[in-house]
Image (cartoon, rainbow, N blue to C red; front, side, top):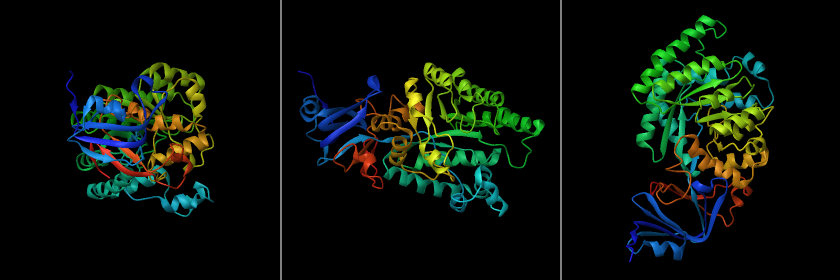
Length: 417
């Protein structure tokens, strides 16, 4: 007789367990009247009660009666600018009726340069405290893993300051935090970006000084770059990402947000682990990204926040067989902390189905940060990263627009909310 595995945590009486699975990532699996067993922070078994209890000894486990609630994997927010100094609320409100030029004529700084100035002015402790506050709310919305980019320092000192904040957040928060270096989010405001020599000097500093230091000190796992008109060219982006790869940082890329200059082709050729934004990505590039396994990270809240003139087209990406992930793109110009809200926007404004959006917010997000074997779905052997919803139907996740259904969040088998 096979000896049963012994659980230390047991969830029972769930009306449904909803998840993708690794060998069927394009579809959801839904178990009715289900249970899930955990041991040492990992999932042992899940499914109908009789099936789970045949495999697992739950007699001494801490038992949580879900009383008909829905159990799902924690959200994986794979694209955020979590660490920043102060808000741009006044700018955002003025943009409802005024142009950027009109706002700047009043003397108010806008956009990434405004965030650079505020982040440089903030101490590490101030940045940590404000980011931890945001992270706490993200957790209460069901997010259990967060990617956090630098990119509002744009010099050695302040970029490293942001990465040190990421390290502290990783140690002191309840969720998993994945650090990305984005020193090429913009050019330093103090240089003339139209001067080729000044551009080259900053890129040389990135590739020969800052990136090697980030890699040697293991301050980040990924290297990102903003490859778009007005920012970094394809050739410049390639230099930066190759330097990152040489120093142990996997490549990510912001691209095709406001123009198509070839960034998605670069992402496919490297290949990068993800290409993010993708508003101007061509059909040919979508096929290349799909072929090379590059995850397309799309950002519905950003398109909504800026009233984007060309919202990304999810249908075309799905038809091209791309793997999609959703991210909040939390930043001072798009202050979004809820992945459920992002799912709602993806469905309403970008014609994604509820099932497609949920997979993109969980398994897709895990794939975009190289964690698909550990998180993103509820499967035996994966981390017990879970959220519990107090709703009667899966569809209510996007139907009840201003309601947060999350009543409990579990990270590595520990209840954190």
